[in-house]
Image 1 (cartoon, rainbow over the protein chains, first blue to last red):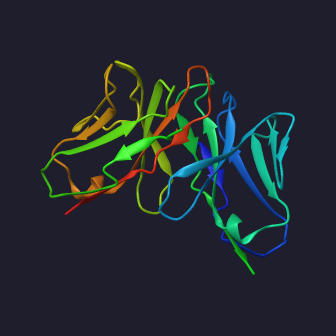
Image 2 (image 1 turned 90 degrees about the vertical axis):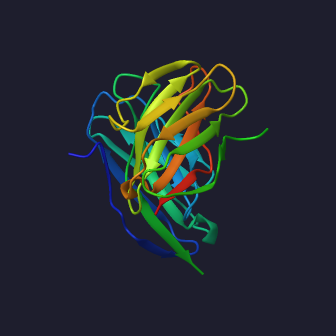
Image 3 (image 1 turned 45 degrees about the vertical axis):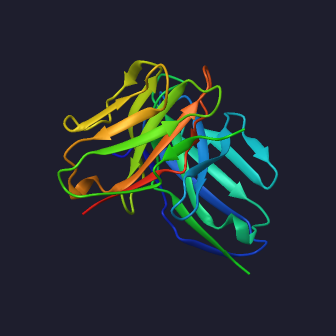
Amino acid sequence: RKEVEQDPGPFNVPEGATVAFNCTYSNSASQSFFWYRQDCRKEPKLLMSVYSSGNEDGRFTAQLNRASQYISLLIRDSKLSDSATYLCVVNKEGSTLGRLYFGRGTQLTVWP
Amino acid sequence: NAGVMQNPRHLVRRRGQEARLRCSPMKGHSHVYWYRQLPEEGLKFMVYLQKENIIDESGMPKERFSAEFPKEGPSILRIQQVVRGDSAAYFCASSSQGSNEQFFGPGTRLTVL
């Protein structure tokens, strides 16, 4: 079983739409959770950390459900510039530092 | 404030040659991580280093691959006797002491002919 699983998509949505991505992780001892975005042939860029209480950053809202080992990302009012691959990431079990486990990513295309 | 720097950005090697990839962490960051991304694959952890110490190398292939982060200078990922299967994007990330957020460099794209 993979450490992190995501629906690969692709998701194709019009500008202004709301879109949600989900992922699941296998290790219940994981401590830190993130969403990164990766543009084609570029490096991953940290979008936001995900906290147990849920957190919001502008149009982006992340949720964590530890009981279900499930992480979500909601993007409201999609922009063309949101087109990218969104990576669900969790850290090494039992530690807040060290190696990260990446999902394969969910591809999003926002069309005008 | 310069981010994570990697060089070269593109590297072409013939089978059997050596590849050296360099990474300079963000200013103030003392933790360095190397990840590999094969075409159409997710990022896979390779190694985690602090200055002069390898903390976790559980993702490194047992042969031909080595990494260091000396007291002075950049971190180096070294691949000896490269094979075609080593062709990939190699990303370096860094974090500050006590932080769990990793910031990535632009990567080195290695092509083995």
